[in-house]
Image (cartoon, rainbow over all chains, first blue to last red; front, side, top):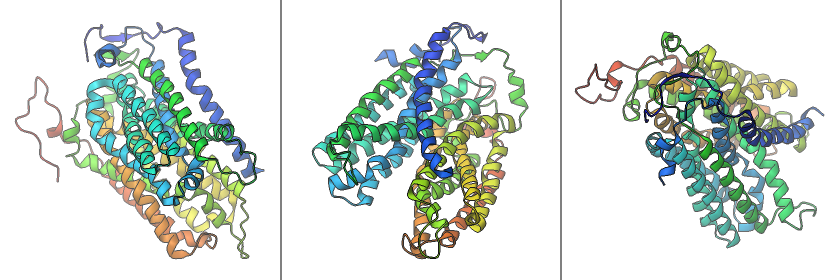
Length: 47
Length: 464
């Protein structure tokens, strides 16, 4: 790995909250959809 | 293709490490589709006029290629970094779907074997290991949580692919409203094309989002001394070449193999098994096909949730202890399932759910276990080699269960007692895995990589 950057502890603030939220939404929403669809099938187990 | 090089992916100061898990998830959610092949299995049987075994071979080739490519390509992945690896994985995975679709449209099954099975399988292997070592480096304080988040995606991918594929097959097939409908080959071919495009886009998002930490980076407030304090956690490094010479590697291999084999034993037979367990004397089952399908869905959620929850828990308990739970408590639960599982459906479902969560947890925890034992130097390559245990279990699990069930009778005639020999064999396997895990000790110092203050005169030999 390159040593181009200063080593040591750094704070995690530079990535915008919007960018972070969009990245998580891009993977979180399909996953939530998949879990929801599966739970509707699971309902038959308790129905 | 210099823009894919590791040097181009080094995070600038201030980069938020929480952007890395969604990048990893994007890849794992896509390759997790491998567990949703049952959606179009019947359609392919009809389209190619082939047997279930011939169609099942597509999935088997893909899983074998996953293990082989992860083992062979692991060092390349570690050397070239996650972006190039994810990019390669996206090309193989999407390319596999494209070639597979050509095979379906032209009615040539061998092209589906080559496309989805062989080429797609390589994409599976590279994609599976590609973000693991990067996540471990970004989260030295919580490696179990980090790898759990990514590998949870492999379990979750099928939850997405299954309903989406069903919806697309209905959309592409004009006869989808007919009674007893089975999707046409044309519809499955179009589904493969659609999945190729969507998965390519998602995986490229992952590839271009992921970054590796700069040399010496540490999370704010991280105290490396706490990591050093744990007995099994090393601050040394072992190369992949030397890791496979250690006893510890093979003990963890056995533990993973036993855990996966036992889990596959239930997953493979989930729907017919619950119906057989509650079969009445007149041959009918208390559990309908719809309820059995719900049970399969619940197991998928247990598999996914276990990957995240148990792996994250391992950051607190330690990896060896959590594996003792997977294998030890798993053996007890498996025995209870075999002996009294048929007394109540609630008991049966609860036991199976926990057992499958242990199965998922085993997968997600193992990269952090390897990090603890062998350091971060080539943990991706070591993980790749360890995944041969998964391939071996993928063959052994169904073989054990099917061989015992074939000896007990024909499908539709089996009951809870018919499953006892297979399930109790899994208990024995879990006990073997438990003992193997119990024997795991810190790796001998002769396998550690040389440092400026400590050379090594010769390469260490295989440990007895």
